[in-house]
Image 1 (cartoon, rainbow, N blue to C red):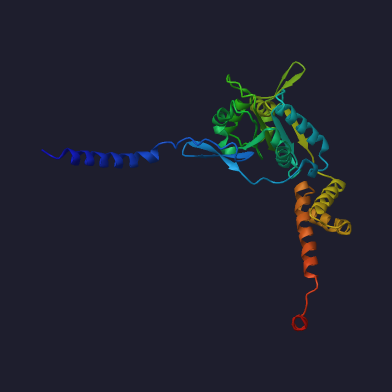
Image 2: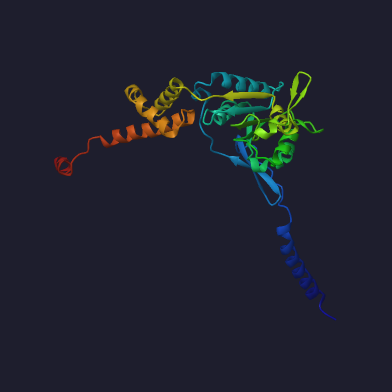
Length: 312
């Protein structure tokens, strides 16, 4: 009769090998986010599961830094204040010109209202199918969460927009009252529109009814209760933004005044007079000015240094 201890050891060894083979096939254990670690989080998914990754370093942009979008700023800030206060508020779609401050405005709102309980969850387009899981994770938390989807758009046949529609307003399960979705896009209807789709339109009495393809695309953006549009900056607004950033980087008034021609040339090269281009120019110009000032500082010649040391 074989040794029972030897049989047990053999069984345990086989069981351990079996578990080693099964473990990669199992979903990872759910990670509980450390809500005190940060004010913003990024959703990450892998192997059929996801978790919230804390974003510990945030851009230090303030609402006062965002110039010449006062109307858009006021509307979004008002909606956000209502949300933080527990009052009715809307999901928001920010659309329009690239580099005009859409995503920067949301970052500035977080910096302004984080102490009042505002939090931001950044979700990339590829992760939109996880939205129901994310929303369930946030339910019943005391904080107020904005799910932020940046540069959102869909191609024809992309089914991920349906997950967004369901969370916005299309499920029997109501979205938690502590969650809103803020999305930015260059397209108001979020999906490409084709000329052939207009041929599907039909006339009913004196009204024109769009075809099913157009209706499907419009229905997604209509689920956002608030639309805020951004427009290209004119020359005066662009130079105002440049001057603001140059002053914030420590440039003197004469340096700011002397930058205008270079700022306009920079915008022509980039093909845009956006707030982003203004900020990029200001960083370049301020860096050159400060570098030139550092190189112009007097340097004591080596021989003079020796004489000074000998006198001391």
